[in-house]
Length: 340
Image (cartoon, one colour):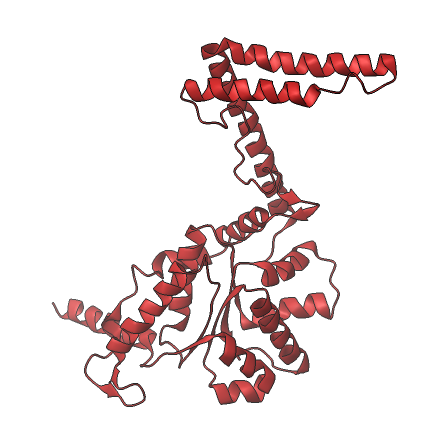
């Protein structure tokens, strides 16, 4: 999942459109306000004429005497403008540009670097061009069902039924989203295949994307492939290098199926670097895996599991493969329909 050149240029065109819209909207606001308050237009003209007049006199005299007192004159003009705007019932910023992003002023860049809003647009575009957006439409908190979890058998390890336990897990996930703006926490989902790890990750992703946070979803294989292409192969592919940057800078990184990738010395070292850096920079990460903590320690070393156990909420999921349960139910319903 990486931006193509055409997608990159599409985002730049989006910024150009936003800037053009704001210039047009500002011109309309100024025209309306000046029509209602003619004195404001006169004050605007006065400030511009005064500045030009003082500049000409300074050039002609070769001194800065003409410039002295200009700031005081401007202050008086701005105070009168503010008073007139307030008396007319307009907001104080009525004559100022209203940027969608105040940090970059709708340019997409701050000090030559991509603004966070650029990254958010890029990630949203990536999802719009992939099937993940469609998946999140069906896998979200509203569609999450507890009916697939047993409500009778007590699990000795937790002293409650699967369903009762999953009610608590669901609350943990909702709280994670609710508190994300103030606390970029981390979650490690552990459990067998089909118990809801990826589903819950998608629930969290959908809500945070809707709140405007930048979210990247990658399988473990996709993640380490990208890291290898940039770190080892030194790829010059702009899209790959941007994805590499997003992996470390996005608000939330989702890593699915950890342990299914080829694990080697590079993988282990990069996984520690990723976990450690995102923890230090207080960026949220959600990882799902079938591995136990012992298996993770054996694959990725003790220092990796140490950072995870100290910096992540470890959430173990229990139950049987829900996908298998759904298939059995669908087959049963299909057979019943045939018999009718």
